[in-house]
Image 1: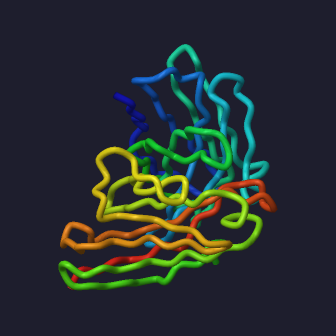
Image 2: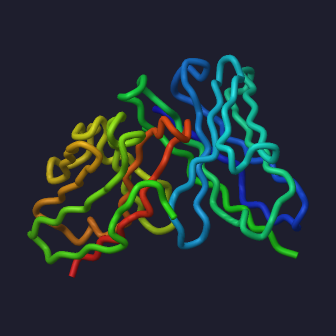
Length: 121
Length: 110
């Protein structure tokens, strides 16, 4: 069965970087795109960007341009999301989510369990 | 401020039918299909509806979705206590070249 297992909780200081992993299993890793979505405490869902797990091609939402980097390791079926220059308002739970289908019929069908990231001095 | 607009809260009694609305624009709902996600506190979102009105296997047929123009709705019939959760709509936005979500609706079963 499809599983997305993320790395554990992180606590970082402002200005630092955090790297979150998402290990996929149960399907052909390189055949899908993976997205990253975050959720600040008590807030809604915010899309961050997408990575083609096969080619490594990426697209990020403008809000995170220059601060986010998504990479894919096909040898371990793992994607990574690194966010730099952390600010207090980056405190959130970060999710990876698999995309299936082609536009306009695409959707996120499986999600990781989430990785809490706390930015605190 | 979310791109898609949802009411912050909704409520109903067991057995009732409730609907949650999601309003967007021509660049998102108007040109994409709508997805709905259910989220319980402390857990990841779960796909409830895709392609406007399609339920993945395992989702009870009490849940249904519809879309008209630039708006969509999620209906829950025969409301049960375990339906108490947050619900989010989502779509691709052509203008923003990214995925957008509604702000979420907290459903309370009275």
